[in-house]
Length: 421
Image (tube, rainbow, N blue to C red; front, side):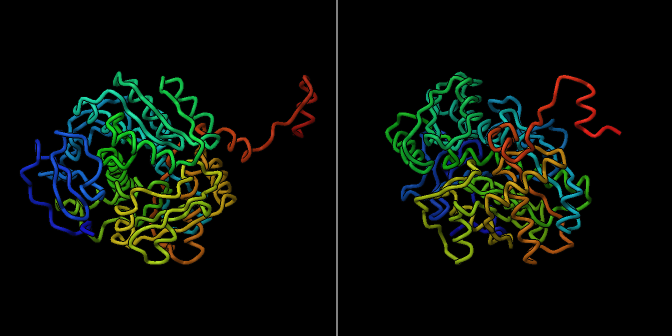
């Protein structure tokens, strides 16, 4: 596999357009990025966006805020924007003390416009769709992708089609897609079945696919990693030792690894300063963890997956060929956690004032487990990525929270009920 953290910057091929091209991550075969629609290489291998000029941190100075602050690392100077990015890097002192590490920050991607990190990918992906002249966008989704695609498609004035696994998507996410005027198809199957169908539709030229199989999606998402490095250094005086993140389709793991590789190649980041990428999956949907634990080069598809963390209920992570090298090259690892451990972590974050959907809390649950096992050291500076807002899945939030307490319509009754001083 050609993805290496300290590999030399690639030579510019004849296919490059404005210093941008696509490359097959296995064979190195290169393609023009905007002449035709292409999601994979000739042999079905994943593609990656490559650049003639790679950015340093100096390129981002004075460039505003949000995803397009990092246009020096992206295919265009601006995109179809709401805007997105510039999300909080919260402190969580009680969780930090309980886990027993030097510092802990929580990068809350739920504060993006539609409530998840997917907006970062869509601002770039929909911009590329316009460049290619397509008129119908589509995705398979566990919920967040559909909400983001619907919103950005609406912003761009484009038709949007989303395929969802019937009965397996939180109602809040379906409501978002519906209100943004997407056409919603509920498939009698799981997410991976939906993605199979969307890929077939894309192959037939019926839709432009904007799942993370599309390499341009990950370009927007890699700005998460750059933001973390910039802000952590500004506030803590060092780069984080480790970034812990939930894994569904493994797009964020792949995107952060790519961001760090490009900064290493440009000389902006020393290889020894790259954070260890650490993936967390729900125990009921953990093919990446299985691959890491067995030392496999690829994953084995799980045909049956189940977890209350619906956003990561995925049995065939399409970005595994990019994500597995990212975990290994950075010295990271992967771990699975139970649904109960996820809920406990969600409650702990809520007590810090950080409201997230269940899948997001997997990062904290995974950090706890790895610290208990001694994999994470007490001296480490850690960032946990939380990917979606609390209101994405209100049903699970109600289950995790306390029950309302009935009380009479009377002040004295309230005083008695709360045990007034």
